[in-house]
Length: 239
Image (cartoon, rainbow, N blue to C red; front, side, top):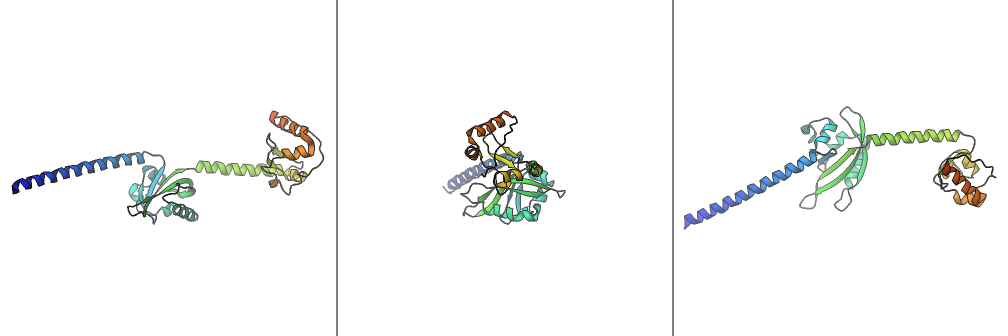
């Protein structure tokens, strides 16, 4: 009877061990599939502890930093950021809460050769069984080209505005709906505004109709829509 009990116990133990191995194999396969998906992403994906120590970096991150995986793990994320970006990143991390939508932040990062590029990152807090944050995950991508284009556009607009402002005659850049997109100082003086910025994004339709009548207002809108020149002499008015 005792031998029979031992046989049954051994059988149950083997069954439990086999089940454990099946579960372990399933977990390993699941982890391999997950890692394969992460590694195939073109976005930068990192995980780090609350103190900033990196625990995982995908291949895209390794390629960007031009460092092997083992040289990144254990490093602090702030070592890859310019000092002036630290507060921005800290605020981003602090805003990561369970019930909050994942925030998006733009900040600069160092490359291996010391140059600086712009990244856009989305963060997420990872919670443990006790409800405390045990890790953070960040997913980012390069927006350097976008930032450079924005900066070039800003400089171009400033140059254009300076050229327009130097024109002695009142000059307005307005839409078909008579919304001001750009005005020089002479136009601001003519229209009674303190400066040209006071006119930007302001619709002049109602003011034109009140001062010059519906007919002239329509003529101006038609000329803009048709791309033709319109010359009119009008009395100075305050808008």
